[in-house]
Amino acid sequence: MNKIMITGATGKLGGLTIDHLLNSRGISASQIIALVRDKKKAKHLADKGIEIRVGSYDDLSSLNLAFEGVNKLLLISSAELNNVKRLQQNHNAVMAAKSAEVDHIFYVGLANPELRAYELEDVELATEHSIRAVNLPFTFIRNGTYLDEVTYDLNTAVKHGELLSSTNGKAFNFVLRKDLALANAIVLTEEGHQNKIYELVRSKLITYSDLASALSRITKKEISYKEVPNNITIKRLVESGVNAESAESLVNVFHKAIADEKFLFTSNDLEQLLGDQLTPLDQSIESLLE
Image (cartoon, rainbow, N blue to C red; front, side, top):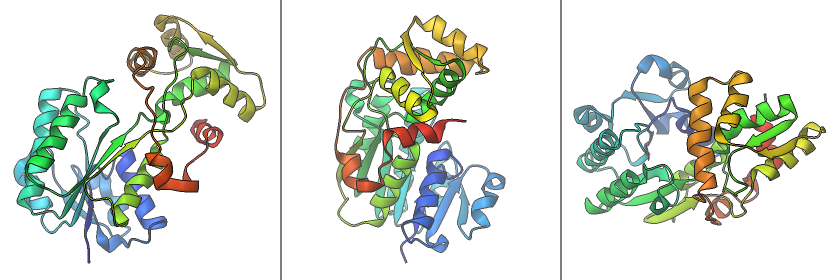
């Protein structure tokens, strides 16, 4: 019986991937191993019959033990924002996978890393090269930016009847986290994905103006769209109850990357993997509203 390990199992993407494996892909809990740093936070997974193993990307020896007997490893890239630490953490995971003789590694990184939208992508490329260098059978799952990241923008817009943007009217290639998790579950449970690279973004770009129009349709009230400087968008978010750090990160990182045209590439990969299970735009937005 193949054993599938999900790293970051108590995180949002890892948790949704497990849900899809159990609920739509016909995988039994006994086939799934959850890698976590804190066993207490994984009680809900253990209660389902999933094996829990404790390991940290910072601790190579813990990963060497945790990866034993794993056939398919979904390795979600480290969430560390310090590239030096992040590179070492991902390297530890790759070395442990090789040492444990994992049959197939499914590495989840960032889409189109050559564009360096977040200044983290060089680590993604280095990790991919490490996996190739140690000759591990692989699937590289390159995730686009979550539409979920604009949840604050969307809910603030509904509250005020106005969607503020600091994106200079530029477009971006949104994806919904739960759709990416389903893509993970699909490639983990189908044949034919070995040594493939998937750029998981949408095939059609959208703008903040499109988001405002969608909000108007969904809420059945007029939501206007307005381009303003970063500080004005941040101020509106904070006034609406978003903590300052989250507001600044959303605008200074995500809005800026859109304005700098870092998210203009498209791909059919996600649509081909998910088919009619891909969530339409309006339904995606509606799922994010409070």
